[in-house]
Length: 375
Image (cartoon, rainbow, N blue to C red):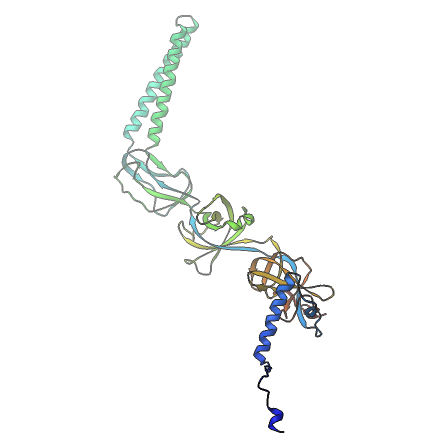
């Protein structure tokens, strides 16, 4: 072959396209087609492709989609107080052991009570005298020997003496420090013979069965929260142990800074493994929620928007914008833009052009379900 036959003219501007340029052009055309189809402007030339691409599809289904919210929480005693005396006096008896479980009403500490007992005895004697005088006055009143005003004075005197006795007995009762509810006592901070005042803590008392767990969840989860929801908690102090409980109450206010709401749960604690102030990881569970889901591979992101490729009854592809919600491995919740039973492309989205036909090669199940048979 002569050199003249193979030489190119100097003014020629035609160059063979390299494979890289071709791939770039094809990718660009596909993206343009997606955007145009989203606006309903896909050209007829793209919709009339001669080669029908094969795709794998899956059906959008409404399934049980449990809600799980993870949070960090702190344990609190069901009931908790500092044991303090009501009066200032010397301790004459200590009737508890550190860490002991006590019942409500149990005497924990006795204070010096000699003076209080004497006041009670004096009040009883005074009341007996005024009661006797009232009785005599009532007998005399029947014979008109005592006026009505004098009888009233005797009655008032008797009532005052009875109130004085009640006050003396209350002061005597204050010399005994009792447990207001059943629980476990803490460390003892006083000794026998100590002079204590109402400002001094003798010990602590905690009711830890059940134990409370407070944790914060985002305000976006408010619609899903309700008393009775199940929770599971874990503590680094007990590796491998899972503590189950239920939501007891939800705070009436949302924190305006963190935009979270405090949730309080109760966990049975018969073995006293959990103690007030412990740090726990919490998983809030709600099993009765159903949601429309598709495989996560069906979602086609375009800039800040999300789409799916819906295959119609005539195997024609439609590009449809959707809104998504929660995600689990392999699944995405679709909150708007799609209906249950519609078929979406999960593999081959790069080959499926909106407005054109596709060939369904396989109907894949949702992740975690039994494999569906191909048509």
